[in-house]
Image (tube, rainbow, N blue to C red; front, top):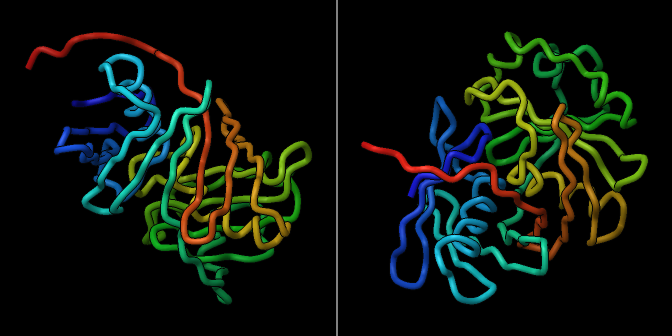
Length: 224
């Protein structure tokens, strides 16, 4: 099954036993993990393919076991937590941004730039020609939020995505960082792209839960 999600990634899934194998592709590359495309796949299974029950088990060849549970209007993704370490020398990395971060961290696939205030995240104007030269899937920028616990944006020209509207997978990096910094496990987040998105996150230790809503955009048929 191919799901064009009106987003930068497309999910492909196929039923295998009691699980669904899932893979994700941008216009340029296959990626290790994609949150919103997984949420979209679960939404289709729950609402249009007759899936019985409130919990779907996915299996990714790149990211292992993933699950999605339905709780009223919210779909909750259960993903492995990302392991991050701080980068001390980040001048070259930050050269693509008009404001310099306080700290920089490296995760399994992305860099995360931490800023002091939400307003800085809103006003960032990245030079994508410079950002594209960084060898990574993408770059997360984040700061404390005014009305939520933290805010973020995500830039990945390396993967064919100038700026992603909402990036569930980036919250496997963001959630453990902000959970430790704020001393709480249940967090609210806002991705400050032009379209924007609200996300609820829960730190479970080695796993995290990411909750959001989905809406039907289009139904159609492809003739191949």
